[in-house]
Structures are given as C-alpha cells and as structure tokens.
Length: 379
Ligand code: TYM
Image 1 (cartoon, rainbow, N blue to C red):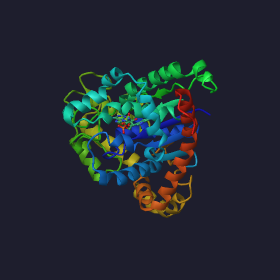
Image 2: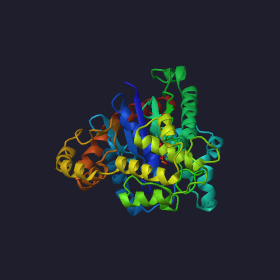
Image 3: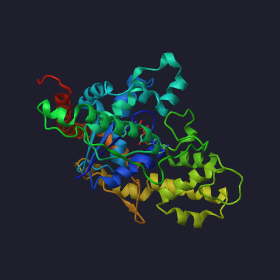
Image 4: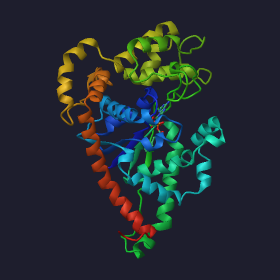
C-alpha cells in the first residue's frame, strides 16, 4: 500500500484552514493508504513560544486529530520529537542542502521579516530540512497539505533527488548497501478546494494561527455563539449577487468556497444556489452550515455522549465518521470527542506511544540506509 504522512504544528489553535486544507483530507485517505500523522513539536519551537504551554498544545493537537476522525486502528498518530530519527536525519540532510535553497523559501522570508534579524533562530531557516526529514524518513508517496506548503514540498523532492544522486545508486552499493534510491520522491496532495482558506477580515491574507486578531479565523473549537459573531462581522463587499473567482471579490470567493466544503456541495450547486443572494441571506446560511459541520446538534450529543465515552477507550472505535446527508460531518461530536479525549490522558498517551513505536520501526530502516550510504561507521 502507498504511504501517506502529514502533520500540524502545535501552535495556537487549529482553525478551519488547517482542517479544510489538510486534516479533513487525511480522514478520507486513511482507508486506502498506510497513514502516519504527527504533531510537529520540533517545528513549533522555531518561532518564539511558551515552553510551559507546549505540552498541552501538543496533546490538544493530537486530540483534535482523533476528534476529527483520525482512526488509530488505521493511522499511526505520534509526536515528532518522540521519534529521534527525525532530528538525526535532519542533521544529515542539512549538510546536503544548499543554503540558497533555504534563503528562497517564502515562509522563511515572511516570518523572519516580521521578527527582525537578531531574533531569527537558525531553526527557522532550516525548518524545511526538518520537514523533508519528516517525509523522507517514511519513504512517503503522498503528502496531503494546504497550498502554503507547496514550496516546502518542492524542496523536499529536490533534496530527495540530490541525496539519491550524491550518495545512492552504485556508490551506495560500493559501501556495502543494496544500491538504488535512498529516498522515494514524494508528491504533494493539495485539494482542489480548501487549499487556501483566507482570513475573515481580509480576503487577500491566508487564515492563520498567528494572526493577532481571533476574529480573522474560525477555530475548530469555537462555540456556536462565537461562530455566529465572527460570520456576522466578517468582511464582505457591496457588489450585487455572489460569485466565485471574481478577482475583485476575494472575500466572496473565500466564503463561497468555505460554504461549498462545509455544506458538502459542488461549486456548481453553490453557484446556482447563491448567485442571486445578498450577504444578508448568505451569511446565516453559511453560519448554519458551519455550525452543523463543527458543532453538536444537542440531541445527538446527549444521546451519543455516553456511547462515545466508552467507545473512545477502545482503540479504533472512537472515530467512526458520522454522515449528514451523505457528507462526513466533522462531526456533530467534535467538541464532545475532543473534551473526552483530552480528559482521558491514559488513552491519549497510549495512542501516542503506539504511534511512535510503529513510526520508529519504519524510520529506523531508512536511517540505517542513510547512515551506511553516507559512510558512518556501523554501531
Ligand atoms: P501548519 O501547522 O502551518 O499547518 C498545518 C496544515 O494546514 C494547512 N493550512 C492551510 N490550508 C488551507 N488554508 C489555510 N489558511 C491554511 N493554513 C494552514 C497547511 O498547509 C498544513 O497542511 N510545515 C507544516 C507542518 C509539517 C508537515 C511536515 C506537513 C511539518 N512537517 C511533514 C506535512 C508533512 C506546517 O507548518 O503546517
């Protein structure tokens, strides 16, 4: 089976962009692929952060994965720093990465520009090498991510080819190895819609965890009232009707796309339904679709809460996808699930220990090959 890996940083709160761009797609892929989903805590320290907050944020991110429907009987869920091979491979790959490749990275330029040179750690520059290690260690075929990771994926592919060229093939065979490619060259899997969810306060900026205003994003765990308020106050325009793909209407395109995804409709269906609407009619429709997708319908929650609590403790049983008119609902139970998972730390720990152990087996095999190909003395 083909293998898929992906991860989210445990910084700030996970928002609709992370969900629609990445996590939602993981859920449908886990049935057909071998999947590993990690929480990238080593990446989270590349910008200033609160060390005391990191353990809780790491657990919360794992709990969100499970609450969204990552099924631990199918996928391995683990914390990046629990598999030391990530950091070790990163060091080896760093030496094979031309610094010019890193200086070109848009995310590095944006983030370092905001901080001022003397506050930028070296880790922010070498961040993409760690991401490449996360992916190449597992000989991954596909990596489901949002559009903002496209450039990091290109670097990962280039680096895989470079290391294969520098150390693989016949050279590796001469070192006593089996020769051939050291790394598989992975492909990004970027969804046709939802790959770039924009801010609610500016349709030209990406929805982001680090934007200072919470008003700019929908967090997955926002309460119903907060969602109502955020959509009521979000930026719109004064054109008549509503349309996708109008360059002068970035907010309109964004809100229609979000509606399309959370309501489980096609672009055509949304165009037909909404083209003659005004904001006053569309906003409540979007709000309801978001709440339906993200929040407990009270009855469902009450009746299934007891069942959820017990089933969550059985590995693999806590994450059946509920469907609503045939559309996977993130679930009506997300918040309940999240809270139950967070409150059962033994369960969460077990998931993370099992995940790390499976991951370490695969990662160890790749790392051994790399050590041998690069000429390190066997232990
Ligand atoms: P991070 O934590 O910034 O984001 C996690 C995932 O969410 C996607 N995303 C978005 N998608 C659509 N619209 C948005 N506004 C939006 N904002 C974020 C991101 O593209 C990502 O898929 N470097 C990665 C984490 C990482 C990783 C990896 C991912 C580290 N190693 C290996 C895949 C494989 C990051 O910072 O994601």
